[in-house]
Length: 147
Image (cartoon, rainbow, N blue to C red):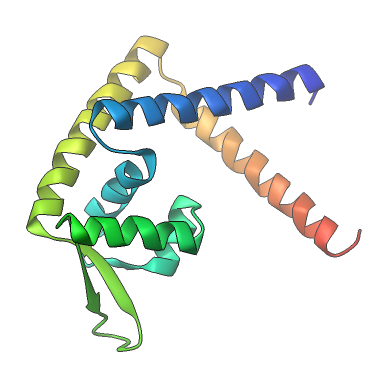
């Protein structure tokens, strides 16, 4: 891939991130809270902090602060896992479910309208991004091994 293409890839990546941050701000929240609500709305039984961090690409310390705030705000509850008593699961409270439903409905409406206006093609872009990220991960692993 040419350097100009990589520059464009970076620019688009940061622009997308910035737009999601602006969307979150318009909705009265922040990017991490927005995606936490979206993720947990898809997993009604809850997730452990490790899985949340992995899914959202957020460091454990940062996610701990976000989760504590969500608990304080009444959006989240932390409970012991039934399958592994050592594990704590984070799940939405009824207030959190309501908040997540509103946020994800707005987000989906904006994303879907944007896809229609852009002419679609997201499935192909996602396939490319998956291949690219897998290859990038392989290259990082090669660096770790000293190759």
